[in-house]
Image 1 (cartoon, rainbow, N blue to C red):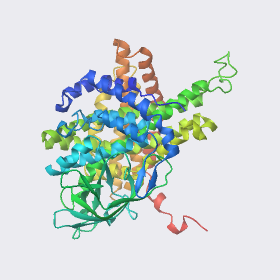
Image 2: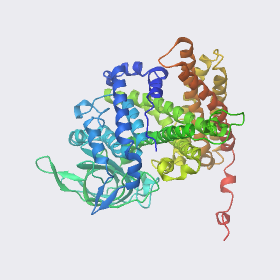
Image 3: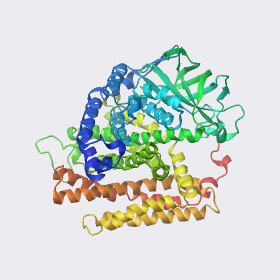
Image 4: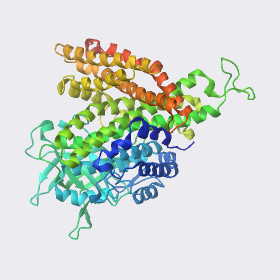
Length: 605
């Protein structure tokens, strides 16, 4: 099994040439220290850590998995040492404020770090990844006392974090939550209930774990309006401020999963556990969305990561493996057979993986700039800026999470297919990528939930199509600016047509929903996938525009590099983007062909 190699050349192409991150960072208060030299040094050191420390643990961690004994979880061999190096490197606090032990670098730097870590070893990356969500939630919604108590040890990596939402009877429908929070005389609360599917709920990497928990107060209204958010530590503080007694929260069991076996996915039992209210009473769900949006963007990386990893390994295999002769004649006449690279169908699979990985990375880096501006607004107390960029990012988040994880699964399966029968054998690692990636379309809201959030909530209910109009205006303006460049003209025509179609589809669905409410649900998945293909087309056009300009005037990369970008853009527009038109057609189909069949007639036994 080959090891992961960080795609630094592609990352720097996006950072320096496509999205002008140096200029972006210069405009941010948190970007003062994010100079090009510092950014390059951080990326290089993170790449080294991921390649030399995390990647070698990827397959062994899957083989060994986690062990639970007497309520304590032991992570796979090598994980504790890797986490020690992670903490010593200061990686957890890369984008956290200096006053709590962080380095105050922009949030987008953290996303680039997470991408490399997640691609090298997704299971390992989940442990510190959950802590980042806890840190953000406490930073934005905690009291000053809570921030002082919890943020520094979380930022330093001495403590870990989780989010505890799901219960046996409810996942997406959090209005059914039964975990209770009883007020105590000292201002704290006692939580009782069971949470399932809790990533990093128990492990041996940190000295304490801070659980962010949704629960109900005794007099809370029914449904989602009666949910509050609480901080529940594994260990409570003693009188001296050190770690004291164990709290009433224990891991009851580990889930036996298809993949990400080195990540401890726990059933957590709260038995009168002491907790502290985080944010206003009965407003826990809106506070939790801070965590959820962080997690959903993070999960979108699990679409790009496996596409990149599977592509790297499939490409290496296709170069070395020989089978038959190319239909156009011998390509390697000195060998008994030609390399797999010379067979068009293998090239189709590899090019699809490449287009997904590089196009998806561009989507993430585009969104990361918006996240930087939103967090800058929080730090400066500029609520108008926060609202503006939160709306922009909120529109893209379900597209990133839903679309990229679906394509990540496709890319992982294509990589396995390139290996043929060897891809089905565990020692080559390809089937592990498939198993590990499958969860990405399920947790933090399934693709169907992301689609409903996008179409039903963000597009129709909240903005009445305004979110689509705003984003397509950006796309259309780009297309019109570059229409005069002959190499880019085919891309620009497609973008203009698809932008118009996106608005037309939105309007037609809005009108259809007046008579057929179910069409919002029946059309949502197709709407999300259409949105994703158009957004990725926009990213590929932007990359093609830069590649064209650099080929004419020179750039940091070679002509071959820029030529490959143009060739991949052309492949995407010719082979993948046409899928969008199928989604456009099917989303307008009436809901009756989904719901018209009597439920009793779905099967006859």
